[in-house]
Image (cartoon, rainbow, N blue to C red; front, side, top):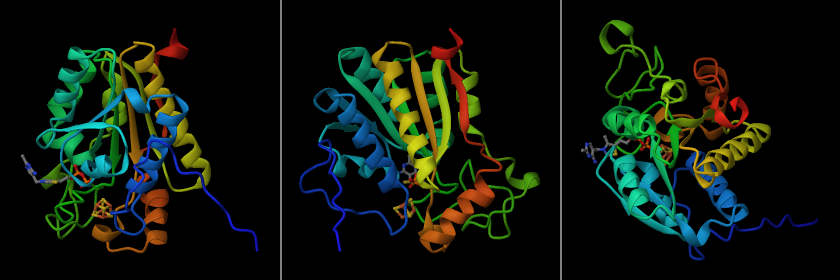
Length: 250
Ligand SMILES: Cc1ncc(C[n+]2csc(CCOP(=O)(O)OP(=O)(O)O)c2C)c(N)n1
Ligand code: SF4
C-alpha cells in the first residue's frame, strides 16, 4: 500500500510537537497560516503578535519571530511593532474571547485606524484554555460552565458576529469568515488567510479572517461530533463569506 507523504511547511519549527486536544481546529488553522507564509515568502520577515488563550501556543509551532501581550491586547502590541517596523509582516492570531471580549476595543480600533496588519480570530464559541466558560460568541442555548442552563438573551445578550463588525470599520480592507468543517472549506479558509496577508503586503489596511473552529474538550464531543456542530449549529448563525474586500470594490 502506498504511503501518503505530506510536505511539512518550511515555516514550521523542526522540533514542533502537537499540543492541542484531539480534534481541535487550532492545529489546522496554524498549518494553513504556515502554508500561506511559505507561499508568500514571508517566513523570514514575519512577526506574530499573540495574547492569551490556546491560540498563544502558535509560537511553539511557527519558526518565526513572536511577541506576547496580556489578554486581549495583541492588536495593540501589533500596532506598535508594525509602526516601529513597517518593513515587517505582522499578524495576530487570537481566540474569540481574546479578540471580541476583553480585547474588543483594541481589535475594533485597530480596524478603525486602518492599521496595516492582518488578524486571525479563532471562533470556537467558548473560552477554551480556561475550561469552557461563556464567551462573546457563545450561541443562544449553548450550555457552558458559566451558563449551565444555556445562553439566554435576557441574561447574557446576543453572540457577536465578529466578521460583520470588523467589515463595518472604515479602515478595514478585507474581512471574511471561514470554516474548517470540510476539505472544501479548509481550502477556502486558506484563500481567505492569503487574501488577508496580501492586503497588508499591498499596504491597503486591516485584513481580518474569522475562523469557525472546534473545541471538542469543552464541548464534551468527539472530533466528528464537534465538526458536525460547526456545520449544523455555528454556520447557520455565523455565515461564512467575504464581508468586505476593497480589492474588488475599487
Ligand atoms: C487579564 C486576564 N484576564 C483573564 C485571563 C484568563 N484567561 C486566560 S485564557 C482565557 C480565555 C481565552 O479564550 P479565547 O480567547 O476564546 O481563546 P481559546 O482558549 O478558546 O483559544 C482567559 C479568560 C488572563 N490570562 N488575563
Ligand atoms: S481546550 Fe479547546 S481550543 Fe484549547 S486546545 Fe483543547 S480543544 Fe483546542
